[in-house]
Length: 111
Length: 115
Image (cartoon, rainbow over all chains, first blue to last red; front, side, top):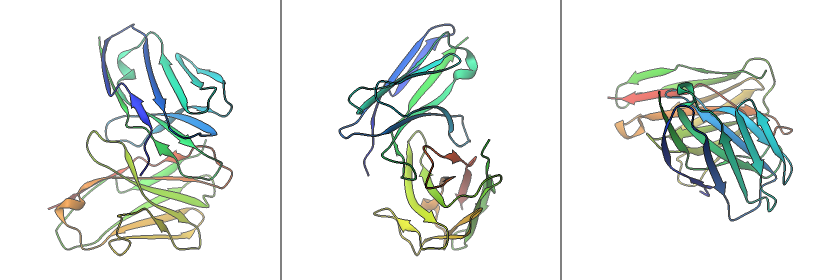
């Protein structure tokens, strides 16, 4: 099925560095979501974005809903070892609908 | 907050047997539950959408007779892998929500190994 284009696929960074990842779609979504998945666990919601242009923060995480409604980015500032995991973006057309996932960004942080 | 419990977390079964995976919403009523399959280092692949009291809607390429889904109550959905084969070995994850939900709460996943 459809999948969002998420990049980069993986990142290996030094502790303390900032991280940026993004997702693009060929079609519009009305909600963008960012999840983190730890090994052997289900994804956990980090940030939800509901309006085009919206910029939302959750601690060291900041995400934006693109003005065209076809893209979103997630920034992590001052990375720490526990940020390690796979980050997924997801788009949703309307409430109650299925989510369309990106391919994931695997983040590795070197202490 | 919303909690989704998935059980078992790991299961090993012999080829030809059936395995049932449960997904429960603990503190909310879930009119919709989604079942995903995830291969190593890959994204989540939607298998089916389960609505309480009605038949599940399966994604293209997913065998409904092999992956039986039952959503008999607003807090429980089950996925039964019938006549399991080694190629069914995978990580299965459920998520739950309602018609008002933006984003969903995910279960912790089930690692199925068929030997």
